[in-house]
Image 1 (spheres, rainbow, N blue to C red):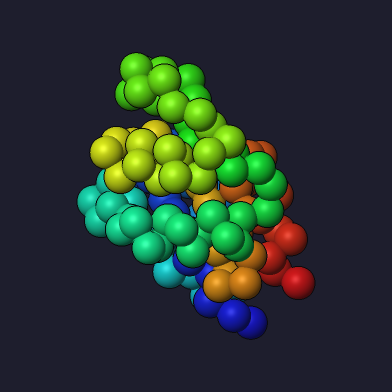
Image 2 (cartoon, rainbow, N blue to C red):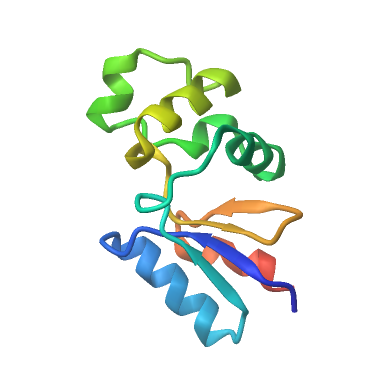
Length: 115
């Protein structure tokens, strides 16, 4: 089984559920606490290329930092710039196996990476 990187915020119940789901499945999980170790622009670009779903699914559009920017959630450059400025708006959890990335909303969605 390939290692899965989980972009994780331990304060988020959905993120904790996703981590538990992966661990219970016996997956090799590399936890990336993105608030402690924010993603670089190149990492975000690569993540967007692997993301299953719309560009807009990468950000938490209800957060004040997102709304204040007035950014276009369908524009990859604007999404990346917003997340670089405010890592807190990155959607969580995101599971990434290096080939594809899935937003864990609901957490069960990441089961698709378990093969």
